[in-house]
Image 1: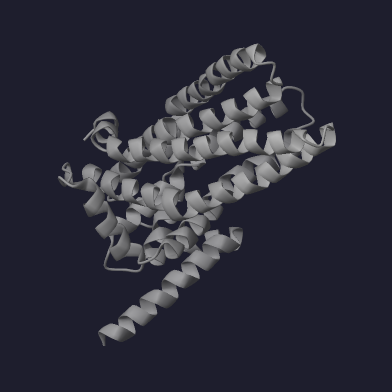
Image 2 (image 1 turned 120 degrees about the horizontal axis):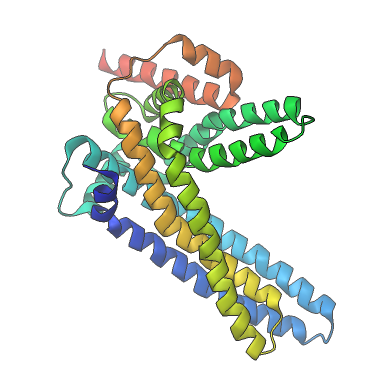
Length: 307
């Protein structure tokens, strides 16, 4: 099944992500104007600034809660269905129920998924830090710094979706712990990183372009509307940025995730894991070492339980 087909067949999760983002945006917009109105009662710019800071703290808390306890579960369910579609070529009729069942069986709680996801993200970011070292060494050479900086940006965008690939690998190997499967998934990524990043090149450039448009159009709309209402343009900037983030996370990120997962799942089954790479990655990344150790501990417990 091609990436576009998988994306279209799992659009339920995209719409749910958009709905979640829409709710957060409405809460943000309403509370922002409420806080600004309260701040304006003081009759000074300082009151407005304090109100805006309090609003930012409140919305930051709302966003963190929604991302961790709702957004992460939506992403996990989407990953489960994409993995199913790519590896079997079919999808269950009730995708939401099937995804919920798979995620609960694999991770038990949202906190377990959150921990695994964070550890995987920290491990794969080593490639980006490696490029930073290259820039530090070559930054004084005219022109090289710009090239390396662009390469860093490209890799950073592509790496944002690798953790989903590694987590998708956990659904393929239910006979072992989620931590062990996620660690294996990271190793498989590092063994195939050139192929995976090459496949992501064109898609990443498209993501960069769409992200710019997704921010620019809402900004122009809000800026024009706020100009008529004599409201400062900075609020148009804030709301436009929020709209852009919602559109990108719902549509663009979902497509990029599917694209990367399809490429990953094509090479993962045929990859013979190089076991000495575990030791190398443990030395490079404390987070990978933590992920690997948790996997080893859980596998040992699982083995003892079977005896």
